[in-house]
Length: 125
Image (cartoon, rainbow, N blue to C red; front, side, top):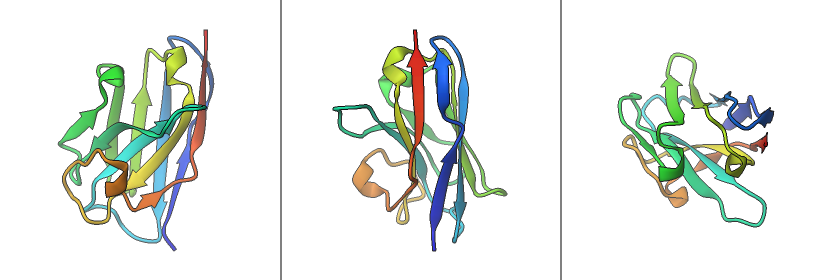
């Protein structure tokens, strides 16, 4: 059974940093794109960051560029999201996802087949 398990969320102050981790089990994703999405209350799930199979190509939504960094460690089947200079508007549930059919970065939620259960990130000012 394939599982993606996120960790690292929590309550932080504006300006602080957090690192989210997503550990995959049940199959390897070393050849697959992975990404992070988030969903704030009353809003649709949105793409945050994506990484290709090798980790060399990344994409970010405009609102997090320069503040968030996605990376992966294929030896650990794990993807990370380093978040810095956090803002109130970053408050959301963050979801990790893996794309079964793509090695290149993909940004649409429909391109991802496996999802984690989510981890809450709350930023207070």
